[in-house]
Image (cartoon, rainbow, N blue to C red; front, side, top):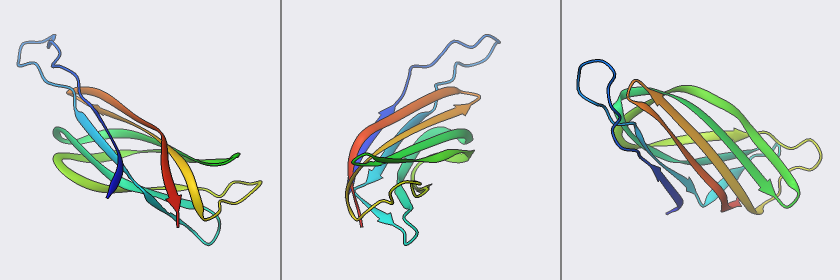
Length: 134
């Protein structure tokens, strides 16, 4: 079962050159309610993304994991994503914090994704999503 879902879509823009107006890509994100705590104290954040655009789009992806006063972040991931309207799994690795390692139990996740294509751009943000590290 997916715990959190966010969507973003905007209306079609006006083309400057002759040709049909294109809609910005749409994006839907989920975060799984159970996340994996690794032996080294780092964590894996998993979920799915679904987007619509023409084929593959550029993306920028950021994630944060908090557990009490302990917070870590995933280095900004960039790359191409397939946007075909189907759900695709994703994984973000969150490094173990320097001061205190993550522990089994409740935590919260923030995820921000940006999509860029010839059709436009879209940003989706999920904040303070409760998860359990298992």
